[in-house]
Image 1 (spheres, rainbow, N blue to C red):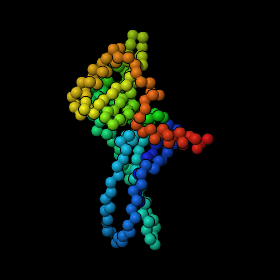
Image 2 (tube, rainbow, N blue to C red):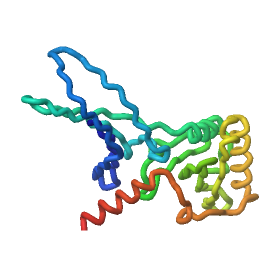
Image 3 (cartoon, rainbow, N blue to C red):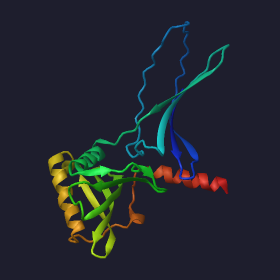
Length: 219
């Protein structure tokens, strides 16, 4: 059988593994020394899995039951990349001159957080942009945290940005929409919205449940 595992590295440098799916293979066969046998398979995975990062990784574990021999296991890492819709949003930010931090995409104890700084657009006005993501049937939602420069230092602002799929498909329109929205937020023309505690449907909710269960067992 083939098993798909998720592994989380916590802030305390602990590793927590979670079995996501199992692909059974019941057929038996004979293989000669030096011979290779390919067994194709497909494994649909949920779209709301955390993207692979230094704190979130995935691997396939293959288990062989060898008659009159030593059973064999194999572990192969797989990379989970952003969905098309999230990838478009990240690309639009990149084209606006935002640079992703090295500590971006880490698990923050609740979900996965993406962190950027401006290099051209909003440079000198915005210090830091971070957001978490929720995937809905017809849109994605970004709950953004902005650290904005002001006369009295820095101030924080939080806002939910909704990106419908028809907007996401057109990268030019998506880029223009994000540029306008972020400009209005930084200039104070948009009010704060959607506190983080109410952001239902954030990516990787199962990870939060997994960590809570891990902490409960330690007690």
